[in-house]
Image (cartoon, one colour):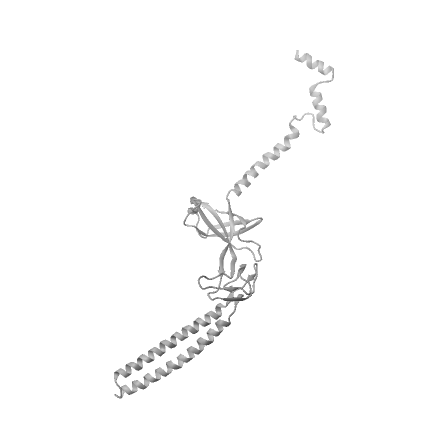
Length: 294
């Protein structure tokens, strides 16, 4: 029955094999290829890319999200009170060690320094006179011209004069320091993160020192991340790590691992990785980063 139908179809020009061959010839394909051949390249590409995708995923599996931070951040102030006369820097400026940042009105400090210098000079003369008087008294005592009590009193006067002069020298040192404190200078090469005062502003540091400028050290920078307890036990300071920020990659080392877990997330420990970005970099604290640990 089936053979008879196929023969009938062949007579009428509806042979399924012939129709398939004609469609293949129209597409520019060989009529003897299997019907799924047009899709074969797609299957081949998929099979070739699958292992690469798996390898890429495995290569990125060790990356841990992190946040960038400054290696050192400090707020600079002055222990003396006064009026701000000048602010020499703006946020974003780079400063070297010893650069002048903020100046306070130093007239009162200079006046105090002059008074302390005069007092120290006066007490120096008094001390020298007390020492000479003691020597004269000592000679008279050796000649049995005066009593031991008078010698003891001369020795006491000499000691008191020395103590008064020593106290005046201490006040002179403090006055010099106060005058130096009226000029706030950068203790190291750093980046100005923020300025907190303006010229004309009165600074009162009686109870607490008010910050004037905030500095940050940008070399090296830190990448802060969190690891599990197992990861914390496997890491040691000095362990090599890779830091990636966008399309930039840096070689770094673990600086330290926290000894206590975070209070809000138990069994999670912080790790700080230090790395040296190039000069003139645009990295900032708070940027997102990725760290690859061994």
